[in-house]
Image (tube, rainbow, N blue to C red):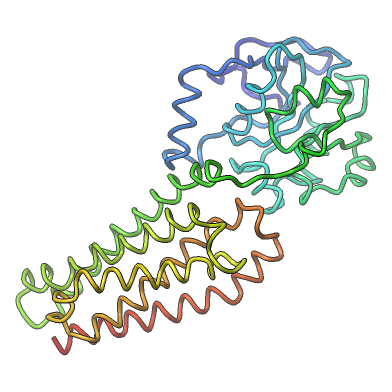
Amino acid sequence: MGFPNLNQPFVIGSIQTISGKVPQVSSHLFWADRVGSWKARWGIGRMHYTVDPGLYALGSPDAKSPVLVTANYKMSFDRLRAALPEKDVWILVLDTKGINVWCAAGKGTFGTTEVTQRAASSGLDRIVCHRELILPQLSAPGIAAHEVKKLSGFKVIYGPIKAEDLAEFLNNGMRATPEMRIKTFTALERMVLIPIELVSAIKVMIAAIFVLVFLSGILGPGSFLNNALHYGLVALPALATAVMAGAVLAPLLLPWLPGRAFSIKGLPLGILGALVLLSFHWSDFDALGGGLQMIAWFLLIPSATTYLSMNFTGASTYTSLSGVKKEMRFALPFQIGMGILGLAFWFSSLLVG
Protein backbone atom coordinates (compact mmCIF):
# COMPACT_ATOMS: atom_id res chain seq x y z
CA MET A 1 0.00 0.00 0.00
CA GLY A 2 3.05 2.31 -0.12
CA PHE A 3 3.43 2.91 3.62
CA PRO A 4 6.47 4.91 4.83
CA ASN A 5 9.66 3.21 5.95
CA LEU A 6 9.45 2.09 9.58
CA ASN A 7 13.21 2.44 9.96
CA GLN A 8 13.31 6.23 9.72
CA PRO A 9 15.18 7.56 12.80
CA PHE A 10 12.26 9.58 14.16
CA VAL A 11 9.81 6.63 14.05
CA ILE A 12 9.25 5.21 17.55
CA GLY A 13 7.02 2.26 16.67
CA SER A 14 4.06 1.26 14.54
CA ILE A 15 0.30 0.85 14.74
CA GLN A 16 -1.45 -2.07 13.06
CA THR A 17 -4.40 -1.00 10.92
CA ILE A 18 -6.72 -2.80 8.52
CA SER A 19 -4.51 -1.48 5.69
CA GLY A 20 -1.20 -2.47 7.28
CA LYS A 21 1.38 -1.14 9.71
CA VAL A 22 1.50 2.64 10.05
CA PRO A 23 4.70 4.26 11.44
CA GLN A 24 4.16 5.88 14.82
CA VAL A 25 5.86 9.15 15.74
CA SER A 26 6.01 11.32 18.84
CA SER A 27 5.43 15.04 19.35
CA HIS A 28 8.79 15.16 21.10
CA LEU A 29 11.64 16.35 18.91
CA PHE A 30 15.00 14.75 19.57
CA TRP A 31 18.38 16.44 19.40
CA ALA A 32 18.96 15.05 15.90
CA ASP A 33 15.68 16.64 14.74
CA ARG A 34 16.73 20.07 16.02
CA VAL A 35 20.23 19.82 14.56
CA GLY A 36 18.75 18.75 11.23
CA SER A 37 16.44 21.77 11.27
CA TRP A 38 19.35 24.11 11.99
CA LYS A 39 21.39 22.60 9.16
CA ALA A 40 18.49 22.96 6.73
CA ARG A 41 18.14 26.64 7.69
CA TRP A 42 21.76 27.12 6.64
CA GLY A 43 21.32 25.18 3.40
CA ILE A 44 23.22 22.08 4.57
CA GLY A 45 21.53 19.08 2.98
CA ARG A 46 18.40 21.19 2.49
CA MET A 47 16.98 19.33 -0.51
CA HIS A 48 17.50 15.97 1.18
CA TYR A 49 15.82 16.93 4.45
CA THR A 50 12.70 14.87 3.85
CA VAL A 51 10.47 12.17 5.30
CA ASP A 52 8.91 9.34 3.34
CA PRO A 53 5.48 10.27 1.95
CA GLY A 54 2.52 8.34 3.33
CA LEU A 55 0.47 7.93 6.49
CA TYR A 56 1.87 8.36 10.02
CA ALA A 57 0.31 7.98 13.46
CA LEU A 58 0.97 10.66 16.07
CA GLY A 59 0.23 9.22 19.49
CA SER A 60 -2.37 6.44 19.34
CA PRO A 61 -5.07 7.53 16.86
CA ASP A 62 -8.15 5.45 16.06
CA ALA A 63 -10.81 5.42 13.36
CA LYS A 64 -12.37 8.65 14.65
CA SER A 65 -9.12 10.61 14.94
CA PRO A 66 -8.57 13.63 12.66
CA VAL A 67 -6.31 13.43 9.61
CA LEU A 68 -3.83 16.27 9.10
CA VAL A 69 -2.08 16.73 5.76
CA THR A 70 1.41 18.19 5.37
CA ALA A 71 4.47 18.27 3.09
CA ASN A 72 7.38 15.83 3.20
CA TYR A 73 9.85 18.61 4.00
CA LYS A 74 10.95 17.37 7.42
CA MET A 75 10.87 20.79 9.06
CA SER A 76 7.18 21.12 8.12
CA PHE A 77 6.52 17.59 9.42
CA ASP A 78 8.40 18.24 12.67
CA ARG A 79 6.68 21.55 13.37
CA LEU A 80 3.31 19.90 12.88
CA ARG A 81 3.90 17.01 15.28
CA ALA A 82 5.69 19.21 17.84
CA ALA A 83 2.63 21.47 17.97
CA LEU A 84 0.36 18.62 19.06
CA PRO A 85 1.60 17.16 22.35
CA GLU A 86 -0.76 14.59 23.86
CA LYS A 87 -2.88 14.54 20.68
CA ASP A 88 -3.83 11.40 18.79
CA VAL A 89 -4.02 12.18 15.07
CA TRP A 90 -3.16 10.75 11.67
CA ILE A 91 -0.64 12.67 9.56
CA LEU A 92 -0.82 12.23 5.80
CA VAL A 93 2.48 13.32 4.26
CA LEU A 94 2.45 14.30 0.59
CA ASP A 95 5.36 13.94 -1.80
CA THR A 96 6.26 17.60 -2.33
CA LYS A 97 9.85 16.83 -3.38
CA GLY A 98 11.19 18.21 -0.11
CA ILE A 99 9.48 21.60 -0.52
CA ASN A 100 7.50 23.28 2.27
CA VAL A 101 3.72 23.60 2.11
CA TRP A 102 3.45 27.19 0.86
CA CYS A 103 6.06 26.89 -1.89
CA ALA A 104 4.88 23.41 -2.88
CA ALA A 105 1.31 24.71 -3.29
CA GLY A 106 2.60 27.38 -5.65
CA LYS A 107 4.68 24.87 -7.61
CA GLY A 108 1.82 22.35 -7.82
CA THR A 109 3.45 19.51 -5.86
CA PHE A 110 1.11 20.10 -2.90
CA GLY A 111 -1.92 19.73 -5.13
CA THR A 112 -5.25 18.06 -5.71
CA THR A 113 -3.85 15.02 -7.52
CA GLU A 114 -1.21 14.29 -4.91
CA VAL A 115 -3.73 14.58 -2.05
CA THR A 116 -6.21 12.18 -3.63
CA GLN A 117 -3.61 9.67 -4.77
CA ARG A 118 -1.80 9.67 -1.43
CA ALA A 119 -5.07 9.17 0.47
CA ALA A 120 -5.91 6.25 -1.80
CA SER A 121 -2.48 4.59 -1.64
CA SER A 122 -2.49 4.70 2.18
CA GLY A 123 -5.89 3.02 2.43
CA LEU A 124 -7.13 5.97 4.46
CA ASP A 125 -10.79 5.33 3.65
CA ARG A 126 -10.55 2.00 5.51
CA ILE A 127 -8.49 3.32 8.42
CA VAL A 128 -10.81 6.17 9.45
CA CYS A 129 -14.59 6.19 9.61
CA HIS A 130 -14.98 9.89 8.79
CA ARG A 131 -14.30 11.64 5.49
CA GLU A 132 -12.42 14.81 6.45
CA LEU A 133 -8.91 16.01 5.67
CA ILE A 134 -7.41 18.98 7.51
CA LEU A 135 -5.07 20.86 5.19
CA PRO A 136 -2.85 23.86 6.00
CA GLN A 137 -4.45 27.11 4.91
CA LEU A 138 -1.27 27.97 3.00
CA SER A 139 -1.85 24.95 0.75
CA ALA A 140 -5.05 26.47 -0.67
CA PRO A 141 -3.45 27.87 -3.88
CA GLY A 142 -2.66 24.32 -5.01
CA ILE A 143 -5.90 22.61 -3.95
CA ALA A 144 -9.29 22.36 -5.64
CA ALA A 145 -11.36 21.23 -2.65
CA HIS A 146 -14.37 20.20 -4.74
CA GLU A 147 -12.13 17.98 -6.90
CA VAL A 148 -10.64 16.32 -3.81
CA LYS A 149 -14.17 15.57 -2.61
CA LYS A 150 -15.20 14.24 -6.02
CA LEU A 151 -12.12 12.03 -6.53
CA SER A 152 -11.54 10.72 -3.00
CA GLY A 153 -14.77 11.26 -1.07
CA PHE A 154 -12.88 13.32 1.54
CA LYS A 155 -13.95 16.84 2.44
CA VAL A 156 -11.19 19.45 2.70
CA ILE A 157 -11.08 21.54 5.87
CA TYR A 158 -8.48 24.28 6.02
CA GLY A 159 -6.69 24.53 9.32
CA PRO A 160 -4.91 27.59 10.74
CA ILE A 161 -1.87 29.17 9.13
CA LYS A 162 0.43 28.44 12.07
CA ALA A 163 1.05 24.92 13.34
CA GLU A 164 1.11 26.26 16.90
CA ASP A 165 -2.62 27.08 16.60
CA LEU A 166 -3.60 23.53 15.61
CA ALA A 167 -4.29 22.28 19.13
CA GLU A 168 -6.73 25.14 19.80
CA PHE A 169 -8.25 24.65 16.34
CA LEU A 170 -8.96 20.97 17.07
CA ASN A 171 -10.24 21.72 20.58
CA ASN A 172 -12.69 24.26 19.10
CA GLY A 173 -14.28 21.70 16.84
CA MET A 174 -12.09 22.56 13.86
CA ARG A 175 -13.12 26.20 13.84
CA ALA A 176 -10.47 28.86 13.24
CA THR A 177 -10.52 32.29 14.83
CA PRO A 178 -9.93 35.34 12.58
CA GLU A 179 -6.42 35.64 14.02
CA MET A 180 -5.61 32.10 12.84
CA ARG A 181 -6.26 33.17 9.24
CA ILE A 182 -3.77 36.06 9.22
CA LYS A 183 -0.28 35.46 7.83
CA THR A 184 2.27 37.74 9.41
CA PHE A 185 5.75 38.49 8.08
CA THR A 186 7.52 39.93 11.11
CA ALA A 187 11.20 40.84 11.41
CA LEU A 188 11.92 37.52 13.12
CA GLU A 189 10.07 35.60 10.40
CA ARG A 190 12.11 37.44 7.79
CA MET A 191 15.36 36.85 9.64
CA VAL A 192 15.02 33.06 9.63
CA LEU A 193 14.95 33.15 5.82
CA ILE A 194 18.32 34.90 5.59
CA PRO A 195 20.77 32.03 6.35
CA ILE A 196 19.89 29.75 3.43
CA GLU A 197 19.83 32.66 0.96
CA LEU A 198 23.09 34.01 2.37
CA VAL A 199 24.88 30.66 2.08
CA SER A 200 23.66 30.16 -1.49
CA ALA A 201 24.75 33.66 -2.47
CA ILE A 202 28.18 33.28 -0.86
CA LYS A 203 28.82 30.05 -2.81
CA VAL A 204 28.11 31.86 -6.10
CA MET A 205 30.14 34.86 -4.95
CA ILE A 206 33.23 32.75 -4.25
CA ALA A 207 33.01 31.12 -7.67
CA ALA A 208 32.55 34.52 -9.34
CA ILE A 209 35.59 35.94 -7.53
CA PHE A 210 37.81 33.10 -8.75
CA VAL A 211 36.62 33.66 -12.32
CA LEU A 212 37.18 37.43 -12.15
CA VAL A 213 40.60 37.01 -10.55
CA PHE A 214 41.64 34.59 -13.30
CA LEU A 215 40.30 36.75 -16.13
CA SER A 216 41.89 39.88 -14.73
CA GLY A 217 45.19 37.99 -14.40
CA ILE A 218 45.33 37.01 -18.06
CA LEU A 219 43.74 40.12 -19.57
CA GLY A 220 45.23 42.92 -17.47
CA PRO A 221 48.17 45.11 -18.55
CA GLY A 222 50.77 43.71 -16.15
CA SER A 223 51.89 40.30 -14.89
CA PHE A 224 49.30 37.66 -13.98
CA LEU A 225 49.91 38.00 -10.24
CA ASN A 226 49.93 41.79 -10.30
CA ASN A 227 46.73 41.89 -12.36
CA ALA A 228 45.00 39.35 -10.14
CA LEU A 229 45.91 41.20 -6.95
CA HIS A 230 45.02 44.66 -8.20
CA TYR A 231 42.03 44.02 -10.46
CA GLY A 232 40.59 40.70 -9.35
CA LEU A 233 40.59 41.19 -5.58
CA VAL A 234 38.64 44.43 -5.89
CA ALA A 235 35.74 42.13 -6.79
CA LEU A 236 35.70 40.75 -3.22
CA PRO A 237 34.35 43.84 -1.41
CA ALA A 238 32.15 44.66 -4.41
CA LEU A 239 30.40 41.30 -4.54
CA ALA A 240 30.25 41.11 -0.74
CA THR A 241 28.43 44.45 -0.79
CA ALA A 242 25.85 43.09 -3.25
CA VAL A 243 25.32 39.93 -1.17
CA MET A 244 24.88 41.83 2.09
CA ALA A 245 22.48 44.30 0.50
CA GLY A 246 20.34 41.73 -1.33
CA ALA A 247 20.40 38.72 1.00
CA VAL A 248 20.54 40.43 4.41
CA LEU A 249 19.42 44.07 4.34
CA ALA A 250 16.58 43.58 1.84
CA PRO A 251 14.55 41.17 4.04
CA LEU A 252 15.39 43.05 7.23
CA LEU A 253 14.32 46.43 5.86
CA LEU A 254 11.51 45.09 3.67
CA PRO A 255 8.54 47.07 5.14
CA TRP A 256 10.40 50.37 4.82
CA LEU A 257 11.76 49.94 1.30
CA PRO A 258 9.79 51.65 -1.50
CA GLY A 259 7.64 49.74 -3.98
CA ARG A 260 5.83 46.41 -3.85
CA ALA A 261 8.00 44.36 -6.20
CA PHE A 262 11.03 42.90 -4.44
CA SER A 263 13.37 43.85 -7.28
CA ILE A 264 12.26 47.48 -6.90
CA LYS A 265 12.80 47.26 -3.15
CA GLY A 266 16.33 45.97 -3.72
CA LEU A 267 17.27 48.69 -6.22
CA PRO A 268 17.92 51.56 -3.74
CA LEU A 269 19.97 49.18 -1.57
CA GLY A 270 22.05 48.20 -4.59
CA ILE A 271 22.63 51.82 -5.60
CA LEU A 272 23.49 52.81 -2.03
CA GLY A 273 25.84 49.83 -1.72
CA ALA A 274 27.61 50.79 -4.95
CA LEU A 275 28.02 54.40 -3.78
CA VAL A 276 29.42 53.31 -0.41
CA LEU A 277 31.85 50.92 -2.10
CA LEU A 278 33.04 53.58 -4.55
CA SER A 279 33.54 56.10 -1.76
CA PHE A 280 35.73 53.71 0.25
CA HIS A 281 37.69 52.38 -2.74
CA TRP A 282 37.87 55.52 -4.90
CA SER A 283 41.65 55.48 -5.11
CA ASP A 284 41.70 51.77 -5.96
CA PHE A 285 39.19 52.19 -8.79
CA ASP A 286 40.93 55.32 -10.04
CA ALA A 287 44.13 53.30 -10.53
CA LEU A 288 42.27 50.41 -12.21
CA GLY A 289 40.85 51.73 -15.41
CA GLY A 290 39.42 54.81 -13.74
CA GLY A 291 35.84 55.58 -14.64
CA LEU A 292 35.27 52.32 -16.52
CA GLN A 293 35.84 50.22 -13.39
CA MET A 294 33.57 52.50 -11.36
CA ILE A 295 30.77 52.35 -13.92
CA ALA A 296 31.14 48.57 -14.08
CA TRP A 297 30.49 48.04 -10.39
CA PHE A 298 27.82 50.73 -10.28
CA LEU A 299 25.90 48.50 -12.72
CA LEU A 300 26.89 45.07 -11.38
CA ILE A 301 26.12 45.65 -7.70
CA PRO A 302 22.49 46.84 -8.19
CA SER A 303 21.97 44.04 -10.73
CA ALA A 304 23.05 41.38 -8.22
CA THR A 305 21.28 43.06 -5.29
CA THR A 306 17.90 43.24 -7.03
CA TYR A 307 18.20 39.61 -8.12
CA LEU A 308 19.02 38.42 -4.59
CA SER A 309 16.23 40.47 -3.03
CA MET A 310 13.79 38.92 -5.50
CA ASN A 311 14.55 35.46 -4.03
CA PHE A 312 12.35 36.31 -1.03
CA THR A 313 9.16 36.71 -3.07
CA GLY A 314 8.04 33.09 -2.59
CA ALA A 315 8.12 33.36 1.19
CA SER A 316 6.36 36.70 1.50
CA THR A 317 2.81 37.91 2.01
CA TYR A 318 3.64 40.93 -0.14
CA THR A 319 3.14 39.25 -3.51
CA SER A 320 0.89 36.64 -5.08
CA LEU A 321 1.98 33.88 -7.47
CA SER A 322 0.76 35.94 -10.44
CA GLY A 323 2.58 38.96 -9.02
CA VAL A 324 5.84 37.01 -8.79
CA LYS A 325 5.54 35.89 -12.43
CA LYS A 326 4.78 39.44 -13.53
CA GLU A 327 7.77 40.80 -11.64
CA MET A 328 10.13 38.23 -13.13
CA ARG A 329 9.02 39.15 -16.66
CA PHE A 330 10.18 42.74 -16.27
CA ALA A 331 12.93 42.37 -13.64
CA LEU A 332 15.04 39.55 -15.10
CA PRO A 333 15.67 41.24 -18.47
CA PHE A 334 16.58 44.43 -16.60
CA GLN A 335 18.97 42.58 -14.27
CA ILE A 336 20.58 40.60 -17.10
CA GLY A 337 20.98 43.74 -19.18
CA MET A 338 22.63 45.63 -16.33
CA GLY A 339 24.88 42.67 -15.64
CA ILE A 340 26.03 42.32 -19.24
CA LEU A 341 26.64 46.05 -19.56
CA GLY A 342 28.56 46.07 -16.26
CA LEU A 343 30.77 43.17 -17.39
CA ALA A 344 31.44 44.97 -20.67
CA PHE A 345 32.73 48.02 -18.77
CA TRP A 346 34.75 45.73 -16.47
CA PHE A 347 36.48 44.00 -19.41
CA SER A 348 37.08 47.39 -21.03
CA SER A 349 38.78 48.65 -17.84
CA LEU A 350 41.26 45.76 -18.10
CA LEU A 351 42.10 46.44 -21.71
CA VAL A 352 42.70 50.15 -21.23
CA GLY A 353 44.37 49.80 -17.84
